[in-house]
Image 1 (cartoon, rainbow, N blue to C red):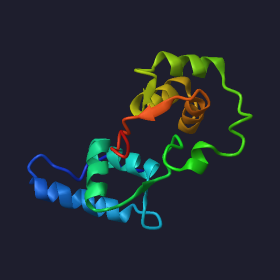
Image 2 (image 1 turned 45 degrees about the horizontal axis):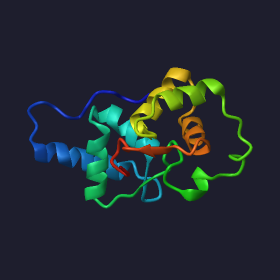
Image 3 (image 1 turned 180 degrees about the vertical axis):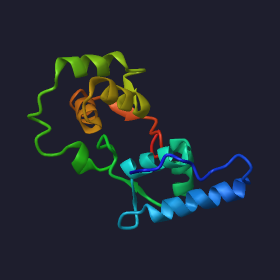
Image 4 (image 1 turned 45 degrees about the vertical axis):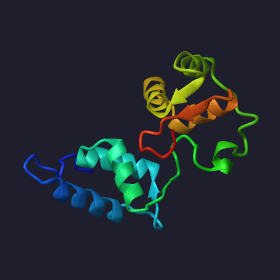
Amino acid sequence: METTTSRFQGNQSIEARNQILAEELEASLVNGKLPCAVAFKMTRKLNVTPIMVGDKANELKIRIVNCQMGCFDVEKATHNGLEDMEITTKLAEKVQASLINRELSCSEAFHIAEKLKVGRKQVGDTATKLNIKIVHCQLGCFS
């Protein structure tokens, strides 16, 4: 079972916290890269923000891959079956209602998935089908 106890403690120096985060990042790599879902699991484990994980990964030149909504790879964003995918009215309406300047933030997409009890990839696919850009990655991978 995943522990939610943070290795970070209030009296630790910034250097010590950075070292812990760097060690956790290195230990969490899959084929030399950090999957998005693993990065988010790390945020819960260490009780840190997603941007802290993303910034440290960037500093260490660790590539974050496998966006949970399919945003990183063209073949994921335009995967087989997407063209024929049925969009549920409820999900489409929720996505449309959550737009700011015709864009959907990553955090809002996560929130929609949780609220509607659907997969994050389904929210991403719906956005793709509706020609909606997902912006402001919580890990800082794209703006």
